[in-house]
Amino acid sequence: MDTQLQELIDTALSMRKMSYTPYSHFNVGAALLGADGKIYTGCNIENASYTPTNCAERTAFFKAISEGMREFKAIAIAGGKEDAKELDYCPPCGVCRQVMSEFCKDDFKIILVKSSTEYKEYTLTDLVPERFTPDNLLG
Ligand code: THU
Image (cartoon, rainbow, N blue to C red; front, side):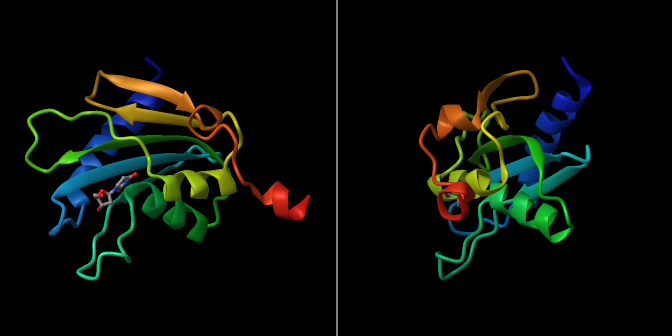
C-alpha cells in the first residue's frame, strides 16, 4: 500500500487517544491530507452543553484552515467506543460532510478505517452525491 495512505490510516487510529469524550465515550480520530502533503490531525471534543461538541473531522479541517491550508486530498477517519476491542467503520456525520463540501472537490478521498489493514475508500461524490457548495452561492 501507498506509504502516505498507511500513514493517514495509522494517524487517524492513534488520534483517538486525544479525544475528549466524557459523555459518549465514543472516540474518533481523523487525519487530513493537505495539498501541501502535510497531515492535519483531529479528534472529537465534547462539551457538557452537548451542542458545542466538535467532531474529529471538523477539528482537523479547522486546524488546517487556520494554518492557511485550503486544499485537501484525503481524510482518514477511525471511530468507536473507547473500550472497543475492535472498531467498526465510522462514517462522517452530515455536518462534517457539509464542511468537506465547502473545501473539497468531487474526487476528495474519504477513507473509513477499521484497523491498520482494514479500510474502505470513498470519494466525496460517493458520500454526498448532491451537495450544496460555494458554487451554488457564488456561481
Ligand atoms: N463524532 C465524530 O467525531 N465524527 C463523526 O463523524 C461522528 C460523530 C463524534 C461526536 C461525538 O463526540 C461522538 O462522536 C458521538 O456522537
